[in-house]
Image 1: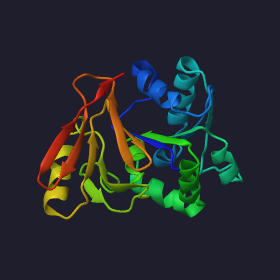
Image 2 (image 1 turned 180 degrees about the vertical axis):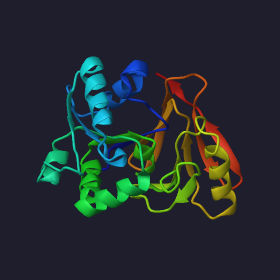
Image 3 (image 1 turned 90 degrees about the vertical axis):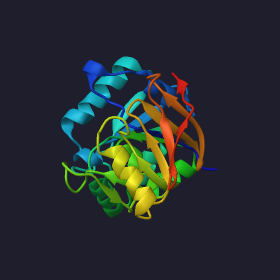
Length: 230
């Protein structure tokens, strides 16, 4: 039976404005009391600053065993063994299209599906939300202009849109793609919100801001989903 995916709209790992509640919730879903958490920063080109921020905030705020998996200067020979030893895989933000291409080149896409099927929690923000779905909105091809991407992993059916309340282009683009351009219907999340899937079914929406939520977006409009404040 497939495990859980927590798709975050725009969670931050910067120490200066870090809110630990959402990550604490993710860790609570893990199968081990002191979970092993692996950060995958492919979408940012394995940015050393991003990786360092992950270690800094997780070591300071959470009782866990943090690690990271870099693919640009790869040091892990057996990806499958490494990933399947984790309890949570946390995917950082950045370039969704590049993330997908690199994962497929290394075979990480296949390993992550096996991890999910074995009950390892998958989560991530922005590109780390997009990647699990069939399609998404992204700035992968032009930082100044968003576009639709139909090349996701497809663990979860439909499409995704992060940063729904955080970037001006997100909501109108996503609504147009779904309503007028044949984009698969799907899910949107505000920056402080996350969609929690059990298998491929939505279990709940959680948020760290009472004014933030997530949405089901269909060709005829959007539905605001009830959200639980953490």
